[in-house]
Structure formats: structure tokens, C-alpha cells
Image (tube, rainbow, N blue to C red; front, side, top):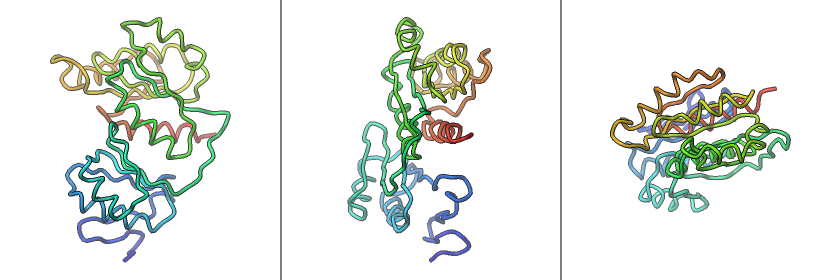
Length: 224
């Protein structure tokens, strides 16, 4: 039953107007919800005509969803459930570049990339170009400079975001990951390093928040 712009499920209130207000439907954060709750939310949202995205979903949750929504896709390494309902045409002249310092940062970066793609954006990827071998980054210079918005995922000390920020005239979204040894404090070191970047034009999202980075990158890429 839809009441005042949301569907009441008892345990959840699905915000039907979020796409109209913010340009993208409500995403489902699966942690803390039972598989059955997530499945019922997606089943209800599937009555509409918008793409559906659920983050931090484990295999058990996907199994419950698939029983009710067989067309759902599961990106196991990224822990995303996707239901594609819209045919969106990306702008051929603008693309978002998603980068990682290391291979270990790819799952978080892919959450950003898939989120942006689901919003209808063209996304390019450049992985494992961290500062320990900075020549790898310079080999991608043409793609880096051509991007309209850049998402830079890095753990350890998070230095890659500052380096990229110093190379481009476009917005850089720094995405700290929880990858690293003890003194990285589960991504806090990368987060603080990115917040203290001396490169102007670098913004920072929360640790491992690939969805937030991808969503922000998509909003920026849509602006004219």
C-alpha cells in the first residue's frame, strides 16, 4: 500500500519518490536485514520501472531474492544485487574513470563503477596503479586526463588520490578502503590522508563506501 509517497511493509518504508527528488531510486543496504526482508523489499520495488540496487548482500540474501525476482543479478565479489529495468544511454562524450591503487581495492572500486553504470553513465576502469609503481599511472595519463570525473580507491596511506588530484582539472572523488596493515586502522589512515590532501578539488567519501562514490560521480557527470 502506497502512503504519502512510500510503500509500507511494516519492517520497511520504501521511498517511492527518491528518484524524482534525487535522480536515482533508493538503494537497499542489506547488512542488518534478514534475507527475507531484502527479498520482500526488492519484490515490491520490482513493481516499478526503475533499476534496483542492493549493497552489502551475501549469497544467502541473493538466494532469497532470486526466488521472488528471478531476473536479479548477483555480483559476488562486490556483494551487489542488481535488477536492470531501464535502458539508459550513456553520454558518449563524458565518462567516469574508476581507479585503484592496488588489486585488493578492486571490490570497493567496482561497487562505485557498477553504481555509476546503473545510473546510465559510461565508466572506464584503471586498476593497480598505486604510488609504489607510479610509472603504471603515467602509462594511463591520456585516459586520466580525458575523464570527466574520477573515483580513486586506495587503502594503505591513500596517496594515489592526491597524486591524481594534482594531475587533472576535473573533480576527484577519493574513496578510502580498509585494505592495509595494522597502522592503517581499517582505512582510517587512508581516510585522514585523503582528507588532508593538498591537491585542490579532491572530495572524500567514507571508508569502503563505493556506492556513495559512484552515486556522487554520477551526479557530477550529469551536470551541465
